[in-house]
Length: 133
Image (tube, one colour):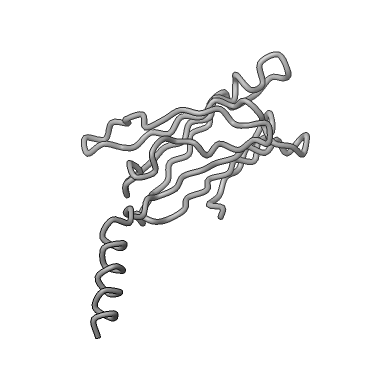
């Protein structure tokens, strides 16, 4: 009986100090005209404040494979409305013209422990986005 009580107390103490689940937000840019990730695309993550204004959470550059996953401490990513802004003009500078110099994607984070992957499929004159996994 004492062993069971000690085991229960040990499990309870481990659970008490376990970190709370945090939302994860990630993205990637796929240049569909080349069939490869869009490297070095500046991406800014913002959250909508109660007054409707946007507050910058973090900024990142896509990696060589087009992915961006580092948007600060995930524990700060609480449910709300978020905006990803992609500086496409900088990506295409010196390579090609682009019709959309900035792409913004607004989405809802509804679950504190959810994973939100927001890819952008990109070409010089169009883009598409969806909720990935």
